[in-house]
Figure 1 (cartoon, rainbow, N blue to C red):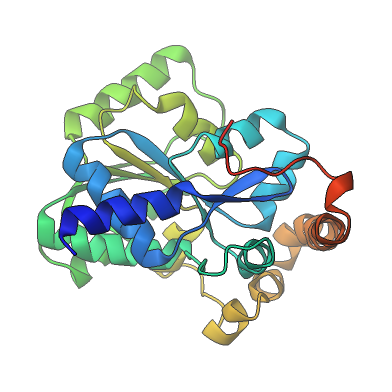
Figure 2: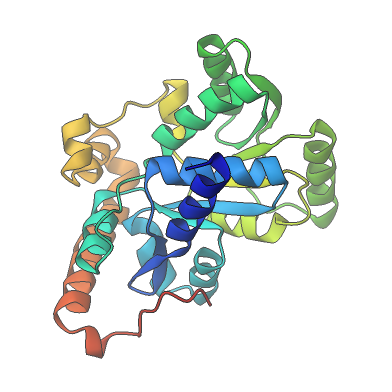
Length: 272
């Protein structure tokens, strides 16, 4: 099979979605997602990628605009195993986890080989710069177009335009967005078409993980769907309210969708 045919096949698989509590999760794998993103860069097609776990799905339940942003994304990759388990139960058996740090590492390797320019937007003060240095140490040929840490507050229209101009002047191929959910999803959707880079990817905590400022859960915990418990143990004061709400709510609603699908919202493979 030619590279073009492989790209088309991957794009068709990624276009299929498993609707989990109303959010269309791309029926994809890490390899397929990378092939699709690589194709966007090569053809200069503008898209954004939501790297989404149970948190993003639950937030979308109470925020119709956030749900719409997910469902209009070029890809919504399953960052957590609970979404993978649900997608498989809904009939998408080839789905596998597309973990944000793994996606970032693989695309960084490809970018270093193909001279794709990277821009890192987000994180706490100094984090984007530390991330860029760390990744360049691992991949000396990696082209970093720039970094930017926006203020925590909302930007004025003038500040936003200035940031857009600065990013566009750097001419990146990929803009990595580390603002956490749902802020990063809103930012990508509102800047699609205003940012010249073909790909915007929201990866949240991957900035911290790959820069080495936070530790990742052991792989066995990730594969078992227990990463949330590791992160909670590491940052209890910051995360306990989030997980106390999200974990039981997601599992209760997901179980209800599987047991009583006729009582839940319709789930189709059509993107609204």
